[in-house]
Image (spheres, rainbow, N blue to C red):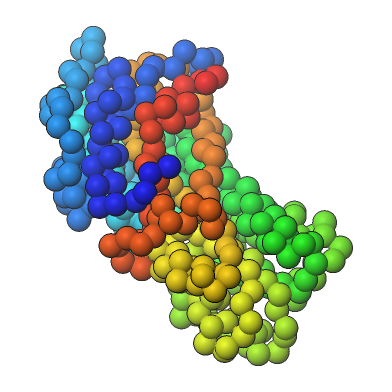
Length: 377
């Protein structure tokens, strides 16, 4: 795993240039069983500026395939995680456009409005898009429009926030349940299987939050000597998170916090420090503000664990879309292992020059792209 630097996006571009039988951003063709104008972002600009040398035009589309019209429908674009994702996708798309594999690419940002996202997908269907890459605002509200798209021959590759319909062409993501399991198991092990803890999850009723909480509870409820004082829910934002956590810390002796989100972990650690409490184990996510706090406290004995939702899932979605459009073999559900950070590899991620709300993550390699997208690999 490489240390994260400002050349991270350039490294991602190196992956894109090296991989694929058609063009810049993909692995080799799969051979397993067969299943049935980009926005400018700072990340995209940096990716283009730092990309290493090589065939700037990418490889030419093979066998007359290509000229595809692809759209990305995202529930929102403002959060830093989405900006990172968009930058990686933009850089990859540009290489595909240069080679003629993609002719048109559009981003439709629903600004958090599921109804708007449905309408935008309807427009893409009507305008004859060959493929729609989807980061869904709802696990079920988009099912009908996804089914309409695929019934009309539009490829729909869904990544990160996933829909539930089995009519989607392909889903690519990590397991939210496994996310929760990993965090909870680390906390149990760190506490030696005994202690009074707080489970701190995101908004109730949101698929990501519910999945993470489910996974954590699967682990914690098996531990007879782990007492869950309370389960808290908050927006993924430090201010409201501290507001709900502070009263619990005031009223209880807490031995550990199972924080199932980066800003939740950062808020938890800030609250503990502000109150002058003894240091306790707090797990979290690769949210840069939390990683920096953690790094500053390592010499004081603070220990933590963080999981990562990879931004390069969007690049995998682009690559999978091209493979499917070219008639190559693919799997409908691609589950990506969850990267993690602990005290042993924290120094590979911080210090860095990114803002607190950035999400540092190690590069995806060409071998990983091939492994994740090649059926049976």
